[in-house]
Image (cartoon, rainbow, N blue to C red; front, top):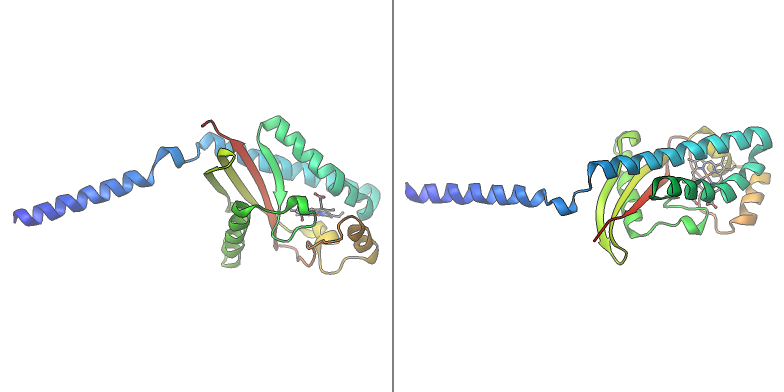
Amino acid sequence: MSRQLVVLTLAAAFVLTACAREETPAQAPAPEDITAARDAANALGAQLKTRLLNAIETGGPIAAIDVCNLEAPEIAANVSDETGLRARRTALRWRNPANAPDDFERTAMESFLSQIETGADPATLELAEIVTGPQGRQLRYMKPIMTGGPCILCHGTDISDEVKTAILARYPDDQATGFAPGEFRGAFTITKDLEK
Ligand code: HEC
């Protein structure tokens, strides 16, 4: 009888400790930090899309390559200035080597990709984690970027020779083609330095 009680008490203590450990506050990103990171990713996406569609409409895809090439980093820098968060884009198959992922980003994108392949709605996917590394404690936030209709002009399977030539002139090691609309293209990636 009393032995049973000891076992039960031990089991209860174990469950309580396990629960407490899972909620270690130091490792859980603050909800307001997640919201701010999500907002920054959405702002970067919206501004890029507006600028890109505008450039395609007024100057055609070749002129729009310049927008992606020159303005994308500028738009990302503006969003970073406005929000105090580092905002950029990355991909598993990238066009600009400067957008290549680090280990955290690669793992996150591989996970997004496999979740999407098994039926997850990409619009609901995001990842927010506190990571401690050589740069100290950081909030890392990521959100998928999907390929849409206009994207295939420059990232699709059937790119015009003119566009292909213009892309390869700037990005001789381009890997960011062969995408179909609706396919996972890459991710917005937001970083915030946290106090030690
Ligand atoms: C007019 C051609 C063009 C169109 C249309 C276009 N892109 Fe790009 N994309 C580029 C270029 C050029 C780069 C490289 C930008 C740089 O130098 O940072 C790029 C880079 C990217 C990157 C960053 C990772 C990488 O590969 O370097 C992502 C993500 C991306 N594009 C997604 C999209 C999506 C999504 C769309 C549709 C909404 C789209 N692109 C439409 C030309 C285009």
